[in-house]
Image 1 (cartoon, one colour):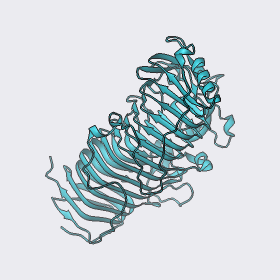
Image 2 (tube, one colour):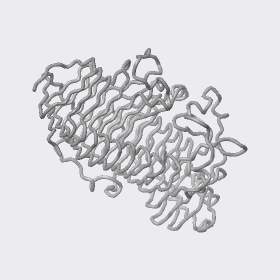
Image 3 (tube, rainbow, N blue to C red):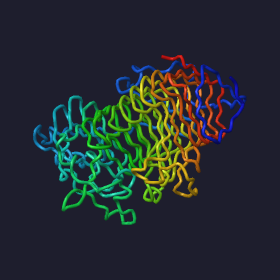
Image 4 (spheres, helix red, strand yellow):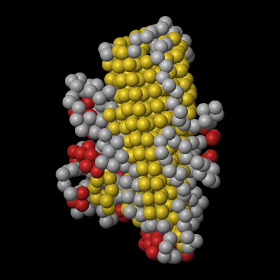
Length: 506
């Protein structure tokens, strides 16, 4: 069967036998991305176990600097030679070593093999905190372990709170490296159960108040927000390499307002922790993430840019991010843009990655009152071995969080609170097993615009559910599905170019 109809403004639900849908329009081939003649990567070629010693040149379909690892002077201090002892809280010794090295012009603070107890550490300029192989930094679980309150963001809103296990603000030329491990507090630790404000953060926090008065440190009757693992704020020239992280209490690696970040060869295990995001790039720019393995209780590789009116006040985008040769195992989304989008997310290039069992593969999230959005987002050469949904746009959110604004109809007036997603290019995907190929729940007054999905082979239970899109093209796509139903609502210029359906798939 052939069709030349490209504008669908009403809901259409169809059940088809094995057919080929062909649209006459052919889009120009985009000249971007990696060498497409190479075979897709395999699972043994990605993730922390495949980390090479050097950083290969960075390629991207947008201007992107060639990031270099920071270098450090020869000065090295071993904490065991400065008085640290296993079984005794070593916070003061480690922090003094960091302070001394920074004051003397920079160098490396070594945490040798062994188990070391500590409270929050503050990283300073020109310091490499190196966790030697066999070392474990175990962080405390009381609110007092994260005092005084420091400047940070909680889900995209600025506050004074616990910060992170390792925290930095305004530091330059810093690193956390080595084959050691960072371990969060026990499962019954107070920082996991201390009371936080009721409701979502945009409601719980008075966004009209000065940031310095938004104190959530868990003492003197105040509420508490949980510490991240690595919370780096306003930092430049950052390296996080080879370390592994387990037992977080919330988000793991979180650069906020940073410029020039390299994250490579790291491993995160946070399955079972409801807010256990792996890496959250928040309102930061010029970021390389490579050869990392994440298995998470929430999203894996995530881009964010602020929430609600506070995010719009700050108005700092996340931009120029390259993710390559990474492995996402378990998590809500393998690569996720949002849901904090107030400052915009732009210029993302993910390539040569494997998604092996995440609930969703490529995921986009926002809500009507959030503003901002995303644009110029590129994904190519991805192997998805198994999962729930290959691609999902969840742009309306849930009534639990935004009430009646989560309802698709009636259309709302377009204003600064209306998020937009556009210019999304996805190609060269092999999807071995997924429950659903595409779900796009978009915003009718601000449709998802200019999407190209090409050169894809997918084995799926269900095909697609597409609502409120414009200029949405699928080209050279083979869909092997069990369910023949396809749902389309308000799709303007939905185009199929050499799309093949096979419903005999088992």
